[in-house]
Length: 214
Image (cartoon, rainbow, N blue to C red):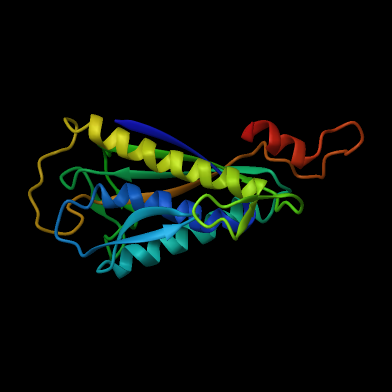
């Protein structure tokens, strides 16, 4: 089973947006005992767990690597993809010393579920701001407002996918927090712009973002 999530985020909120999406996916695939908690980002609450330091470190490592590889080396807007695969233990053989989210090798690895997160990072916008919906005294830029809407839409999509698709989940035979091995991978978008676009005749980022928000 494959699911696709699209996420648009301004550069200043990119890292936490991606982490929130990944944590929401994992929270719904940690079938064993966990210590649940919630976090809030961009006025949106998402689930997490406090007793999984290895997973926390892995997510931090992968998101930081994604930004270095796919975003920092490009001119914005830039794109990249993060994939999360959940495998059957019977099909997977541990390759590294710690199986928690690391690499696996097998003669015939067939993930039972794959999540593809298509990420677009927008440049930091300086200009008009929009009042925050929950805190009228503070304001967001239009790009951050769009990021908030995209982040919330991504979480809703995850919950919708999870609620509507359960039959493909393999039998759970372990009491571990994460009974299924998993892998997080990064795919760079080769078509991301490597040089600044010519501003003559081109609409600015403000116009581009305004069109999307409208």
